[in-house]
Image 1: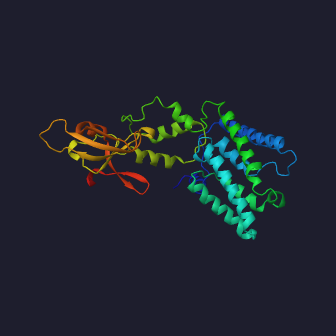
Image 2: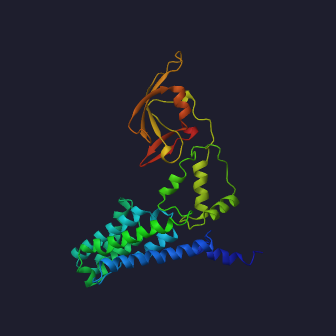
Length: 320
């Protein structure tokens, strides 16, 4: 017989009401941050636009949630915030001015804004609301025309971004923007092959130690780690596996990751220290060519890779 708590727990999972490993302190800090963010927007707007009817864009409220409750999230970073709102405002104003029927202009503005944010790599959900406000905001917004992009949108964005940078810097566990995390970890050898498997309980504990909302669930993180570390510990490649015209990766992480193409190699077995010419196609030294020995290249190479659309994929050992 199933436990009485099974159905309620299942219902919680079905509706997506996951528990988040954040302390009461973190939740309070997030709330205070949102308060400070919107206050900064209001004060800046009131100071520079004291006589304007529209002082703030309502979508700033949604941005405040991201910047102060999910500061480490990809959608909360400065470029998505700035680019998302500005491009959406441009699209919204254009649709409002050139598409007379609001029934078509409103959904068109949001759809085009999403597409533009995707291609410009600045997806920021509140941007959709900014595009929508530009269309359905009424005569006061329409009268601003393209000036709506600068004031209030750009002014609002700069005000809340400045507050996010200042406020999040007060708390050592909040690294905003996210690049601060890489700067803090630059002394850590990210290529350490000694990583072992992580127990489920240890992973959950690690998440709780971050003490911040992470916009991905526990199961996804475990799956990502499993995929990233599978067959991670190996002995590299043998010189006999190196083939001219093939690509190889050093298997490192972040900015240290690199892919090289073997252009030419001396395959004569009677010559010690046979030379090899390669070109770096991705990573440090991109587009440069160099000469090394086959043995040295084999020690550098972790595995063979191939290009699949925009991504590099590992060649499985059985398919070499």
